[in-house]
Image (tube, rainbow, N blue to C red; front, side, top):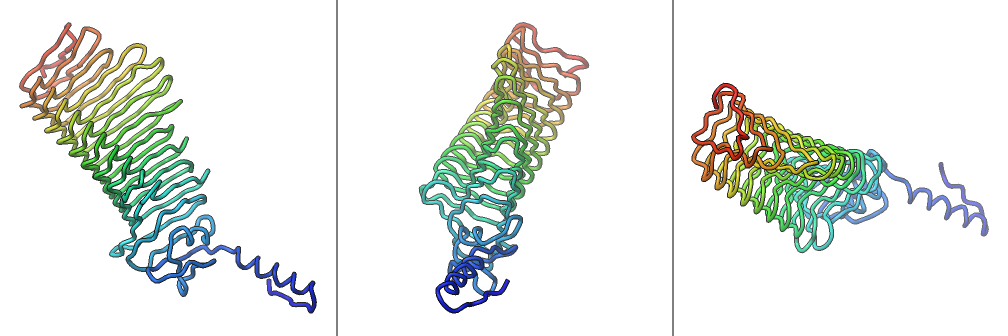
Amino acid sequence: MPCIFVAGRVGALLSLVCLSTFASATAQRTFVAHDGVDGPSCPISAPCRQFAAAVAATSSGGEVIVLDSAGYGSVTITQSVSIIAPAGIYAGISVFSGNGVTVDAPGATVVLRGLSINGQGGATGIQFLQGARLRIENCAIANLGSAGIVQNASNSEMIVLDTIVRDNGGGGILVIADGTALLDRVRVEHNAVDGMYVLPLTSGTTVNITHSLFAYNGASGIRVDSAANATTFTQVEASHLSHNGATGFRAAASQSGALAVATLKRSTFTRNGGDGIYASSTAPGKTVGTLSENDISGNGGNGIHVNGTADIRASTNSGGANLGSALHCDSAISAIRSLGDNTVDSTSSIGGCLFVTTGY
């Protein structure tokens, strides 16, 4: 509404109220540029310089658009918003301390597209603390002291597409929450610990991974745990887990009521320092898995290794040239159920835990 100026002190007060109203307004679309100046509205004609200022000026459900290449600073997001760098534009965040992007937005949907997040002493690239949904698209997250991406938001959904997570001092991607995570065409490389680590807290977590690479990480390519009375569902399809320092894929459950369920198909587990695939559980926990059409070869340990009460069903897998056996189970309470057509060069079974239906 327009301002009405009235002479005298009352009019001055009205003027202040009117100016304050306009100053606090937000826009559905705001902009940042290398020569911008942080202001209250960040329109395309007067863009802001920092992501933080632009997000503050953007209404819930709105967009922050990057106009040209530059670094735009760390940001904490508390509402539904999209930060978008179009193709061909470098939108950088140098993380000198703390997090590059913090999403602390209960019930919100946040989209991060086209960002390059580079650690310069900071801990985490993207920290998802609270929110309904986080989409990370076409981003690069590297050189953080702790982790590239961390999902802690309870009952949340995280989708990571066409993204690189590399050279971080801890893990690449950590999902430590009850919720879901979906990765498609993601490269997770040269992180100091696990490429991806999954741990539900109270009820369960579901992770789906397709067409992705986990390579040259210091520990496991993907490591999955399960908490007491919680179920972890993990599906890996058409992906490549190789040259990791420990295991290609590792799943375990040991606490009461804990269940880890893994489905691995049409993927490659090669040249890892330990086993290609390792499944372990200790009663009363349980790990079960279905493995099909995988290439599991050339690993420093066994191809498929089952320990404790873990129970794995395997069919149409191929494996050879592992330092250990292609199929190996540790005790009478373990089980590898070979359902047929596994092409392997060696097997070993302690306590008769390898069950063959129609040949390997």
